[in-house]
Image (cartoon, rainbow, N blue to C red):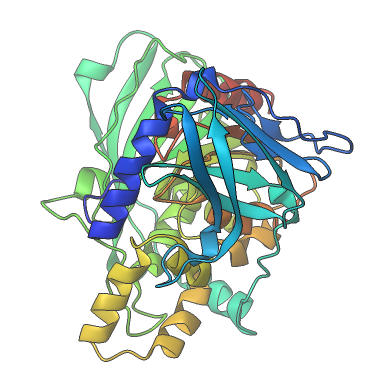
Length: 422
């Protein structure tokens, strides 16, 4: 997701956090117990993610001058409150080498903002797999999506192809493709297909919110079909637009993501229709909005055999609004302008909350997240992860990273290795 809309408080929080990142790579390991720790864990560990049993000790280097200081822990679910919930407060000493050692004791599962003096802030996590964010799907959730997909199935695929010579060679040919989708919408994207005869594994890549169009290097993965999906009004269809999250809020029938989620499913229909596609080897990944679409596509279509979503968007709208301003409060503003009651709004959004799709995902999942993410905060990622219908799941945390997981080369390597095994 890409957005420049943030409240003044959010901008201040982000600016303050930047100071901790300068020395992040020098952080010392945690003194927490790692007994009975789950398989998914922080790589590399910065001492900011506690996975084992309490008591916990925070030991890290900080961007702060030596001397006395006050350290507080604030629950992430209170960051948008007028009075944040401070669960821990203690006077500490920043050592001459800028390290601190603080016994935190026992903490409930969740994510916390560390506040040191008035300027240094960063996030830590405690046993994220124990966070409870139960699905709140309406009784007719399945019926609604079954009816929607039945309508989608009535729309002929009928793709239109246009070769892109500058990204084609003797190994793979690149095309821009467009095809009709649900409700009169048009979706498609950029697809790169091997030239040689045979059946090839397929990797579907779902794009972030308003992300630029991406073209594949024809030499980079020449033995795979790759498809970068453009959902309606984004990607190759974007024409000066920069917001979609608040479109059609009046009802579940008109909300933008009803069509967008259908576009995610239609992408699977498209790749499965390709003569050279090995339909037993379709995998998918995406970041932010792309991570959400990756999850939804896997929930709606079992032909996807494995997924690797990063910092997935659209998880747990009610809690999302308690942690960061964007995007839910932007949705609030539009809903208020249209006279939509909050209770009615949140009820409508349950049909598009990715945590409600999560129990329907049964393929292997490898999720990544940035512990410092103030756009798709970790709590919302785990609202999805902890409700997955598969037990074959693990996560990858980059403690010093914010939202830009696409900049983390180590995650790209991890993801490629995971997906190539299917």
